[in-house]
Length: 224
Image 1: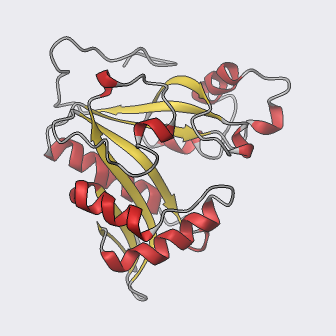
Image 2: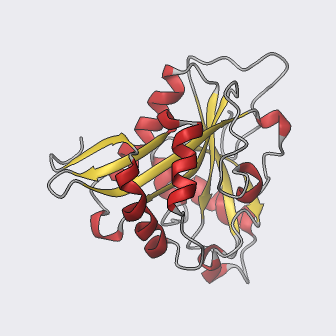
């Protein structure tokens, strides 16, 4: 349950500036989304752009941006730039059966209120409502850089999945019901905390059978 002072809704033009500022704070080594990019996201797939709003101030304090893809046209470990057409979402496929979670973030001033979880729930509801097969994304590994010289990324991820190691982001995704597919290097180009590694993650719609001729990839620590 969200605290009463927050709600999840679809993105509006008045959200572009505050969302850009949050991106600047959360991802200091990357170029934040511009108003033009966010406007384009809203044009190509308006029902897939979610915002967490702080109701008393009527301000966006978090976001989750998605698009539909036909992942058979890509590799599962393609980098973010490829899967999002460099953040423009111009590769959105209206008939794509996979919802791709391009980004989810919450302002540092409003974390620890369950907003990221609520934003993810909203995207899963969209997967079910549009009868999609699954949702795919990637998890940063901000605890990895500190041990990268001694622990291979695959092993790090397996230990997080097994619960013998904790990662600030991946552990939260696992608790939220995501499954890990594989490690990927270079998903984001400037994620120094993660040593430029990430984990491909997925959530499968229990009511969405796979398209003909396609199958789910194996997951780490369990079946798909």
